[in-house]
Image (cartoon, rainbow, N blue to C red; front, top):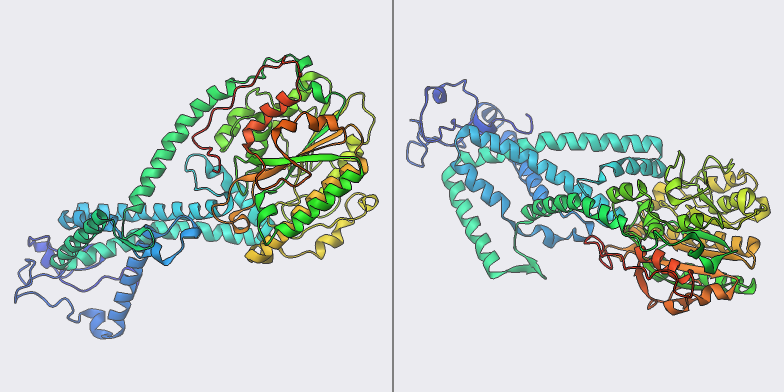
Length: 620
């Protein structure tokens, strides 16, 4: 017997008798037959056939058949209920989220009870398909909220599914990723088939006894209206009456409209740049002769410094590194930036920081990288006083954005000479990437100082296996890391355990910070300036649901005059920003930096503040 086995009840007549309705071979309506009188008129009178009288298989299996029938019916009802009530964020997976009265099935039932048979069937099937799509959207929301701290954008986010598949390969292996993809495809197809059948079955159940169904619908509607009007709450501030599915659809429709409007508005915003026409000889005069490094540490967020399960180890590493750098003659100042992204999509954080524009979605990223916006590396390049290079070990293919950023040379994973193993997503350890940078660029004689953009990837999730610091002279071509990788933890074990994920995340940040600061101690000199920051917070499993988007940012310099230029920023001394240190949106950094290190005689125009984006609150 299939999920939607036909019951053996008298046929639905919709209040009128037809010859076809009396024919034994006529197919039952909606997978269920309604109760009716012997003469074909619906009613509860003496002539009404007993809807529970044994027929066919029910007579043959008087116990099993009814049990199976009701089991399947209850499963159909549960599936529809879950589609309506499932929250799009695991933070709301609580009993109170499901102990509410939804408006949507009441409204739908009222409509279906008055429709003729054929329109009713069509509407039931369309409703089932719609509910399947709603449930799929909620499942996408759950994943995006868990990893990126926001819901799924139905216009822009389809391209990110490829990145999700790549991440699965790094976490569960190629076979695991393939199995997951197949499972997801099967689930989607199953929902698109099973959900319409479930709705059809429930609609048939209503028309089996329309009198009772009508009374139940009226009672449910009355209760819902009463609860809504009185604002009744069951647990805490959760209202009893809800129309969350209608609200979800309205919200997504509004987001689609806002996304389409945003493209045109952002294109105009890109054209406004207070530094676009500044003469090259007036740019970055306060850093002339300095080797400047901009380094991004993957997933280095506020949680690393403030979460009780993570912060002790990270803060100890930052304190030790501050002392070690001080002994080497370096000083530092640190603050906070609010990233345009969270949990992933690192390139959005990089481009926001470097371009001075709030780039929180892929459409904005495509728009800005297709133009000629002045970026921080581009400003160094425009002066003609620096050689500009990029070290991007996470890139495994041609990277045309290097030209947009104004980089003379880009070293991706294929150019760094690494012969060791991957560490999950990270193609190579940070210590190796920095060693390669020293060998290929930083340690060579140049007729100009270097401006370098370096992306460190060892702290990228799933944080297993992790590399370890080794003697810098032993790094070689990276082959030494084979034993380290083999002895590391399984990423699937770490990812599935929230406590382990936090522990390993903290260790990964400690490793990345130590790699960078030891590089500065070992290879830096009196002309070295380093700006390093996180690109975004780690995913919700580590940073917590509803966590801020804040990341630490630090300037390290040997020459005290470099730090004196930002003395009015209010930043904390050392590598660790205090909790009350200033918090700026990440897109504000470029203008502040170019102003601080421009001419001190006012030759550089006062940059206008970046207009606030509706999608970029202080803590998105």
